[in-house]
Length: 264
Image (cartoon, rainbow, N blue to C red; front, side):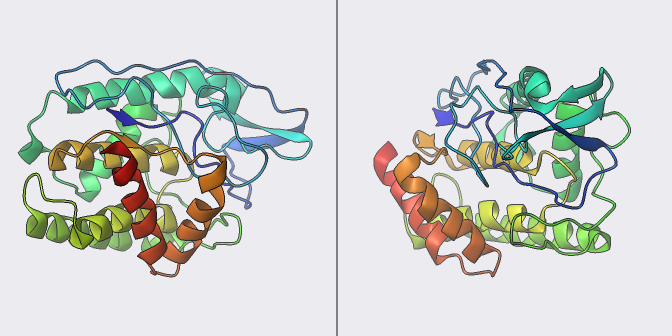
């Protein structure tokens, strides 16, 4: 079972997106439990998210990704259904991710190669119904994620291709069903941390990262993994992400070591 959250990593694009707006209001909790059905026995029943930026901890179903608990605001975004809050869209976003992940379970591991086209297809297939104009496309502007400034938007095609080639090279060394060793932990740390650091899309980078981790866990035949940090783990996880932004993978390696230790 791979547990992932609909809550999301709460990444904030402080450069306001043309696709969204912020309105003064109290955060509204919404969303629903998502399930994935398929042949893979390690598949969890909830799609959970992880990168928190502000506010208190939330249940997995309650808050959509990137709907940060601003002190007095809720973020709204223009969708095919009109202008909606992230919490209103959360159940539909979860269903999109569920549908894509269920389709992945019908593929063999060798068909799940990580390429730029594959990553963009994850984003497009999950979110095109709500955001047909930009789903599956790299971001077209620079953004700030908390204290981290991801690379410029025009570098996305090169950086995502580089990321995919690097990740597949690491996976090739591991082979199928590798033992829990440093090289596996570093590969998982790189896969998670580097993708979130590059931040290739305007929105839903956390969801795409978790779909990628789902694919990797499937390909590597890993035991059940809980990707949602609890309150005690949250500070260490955010520190690991910030170190990953500086290409230091050791803290994220320790995060994955703890995840796999708990799951074994």
